[in-house]
Image (cartoon, rainbow, N blue to C red; front, side, top):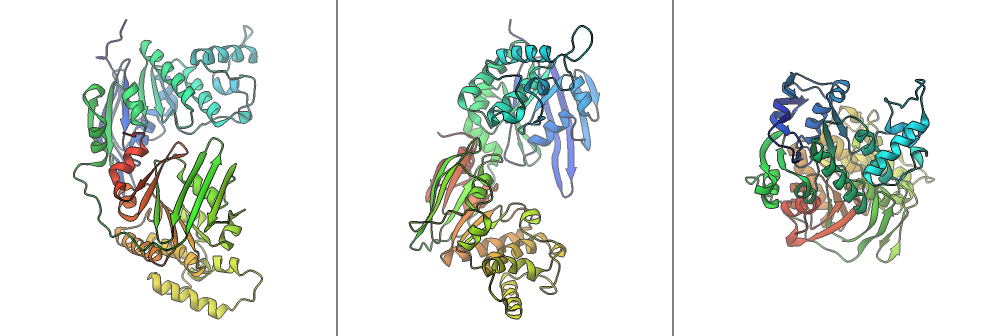
Length: 500
């Protein structure tokens, strides 16, 4: 018997959530009907995760009402949310690594025997029944730490399925699953619907949205843009809602000074993370890497720079193997790496500007006699060139603005004369004026013949700055957009799984 879709299970009414300087959710209305899959889509930062964390009870809203089964709440907490039958599967796996699979599944609800004592045998038996319903084969007796990333994702799903579900929130559930397990998950989702369970499904993969969804709501910049019945909307309309039809492409002049020589990133892989990624970058070219959060962008470039371990992969410059063994080796071979989190990974916040800028050059010249006066003059020259606003190069970096901190990071690679620059989110968290200065700096470096790889979550930024863009999804580089193909729409289209 088909479950009617007229009965509301939950809804949010004018939900607001503020963070310093940002309204993450702005009067968002959302509802879920019994026995339906209601999908949530939107670009990175659209507000999807904030909304589902409010429903899961992990985040307190600043305004609005949450209605669950006819009862109104100003906020939920995790205990209350679970008691109401709302279970959330997050993109990350929150599992106890040193406990068995069975113990993880029933953690907080451990099975007991007739005498009232904990029964591992019953936990294992019940876990096997859940796996049988999921049509997967995992030994409930082994430690979670011994499992593959794919198996851990299945355990997270099984953990939620073990509860008395009414509402299941799935946040990017297939992000770490292979195609075979994906299909088993989709089958299980459909079985749950037949039992009247309602599902909120968050995915960047539009193929999944059209396969599973009954309705889809689009969020953009913290606002609800539209809710569509899946049968009444197409991919083009969803992408338009996600981007905004009125949003014009930036028309910044791109570097076109291509020089002799190229860098080849060849066959980089790491099990469960990166799958055989290869591409080439010419001197003077800005090669962008796009893709959504979790697509493997940062993991890839961290392996290229020698920070993270790899199973395979070579870095070849003009036919010569320069694969770095570690970051110091990478620096000595002419690589520079601007990390996504500059405050944690790229700066010594409580040290002066001159120490931060000179540190990489000192690493390259370790063992040589240092000429401190000359070193300080070189740092001053770089500081002046980059227009770092500070009383002097003795200023502590922590006291600089975000834009000036980013210039300091660039400065250390400039003074070291790095030949290959990997820039991971080079303009994140800085104001528009500083962004334009950074863009000008990057273009200037390209025109000097530097090899530049630029990673960004900002699709307009990639579209306006990069000569070519490789799009990452699920650890693979699924498409390299060439010259005229580079556009915000194309980057987003391939990022979310559309290849039409």
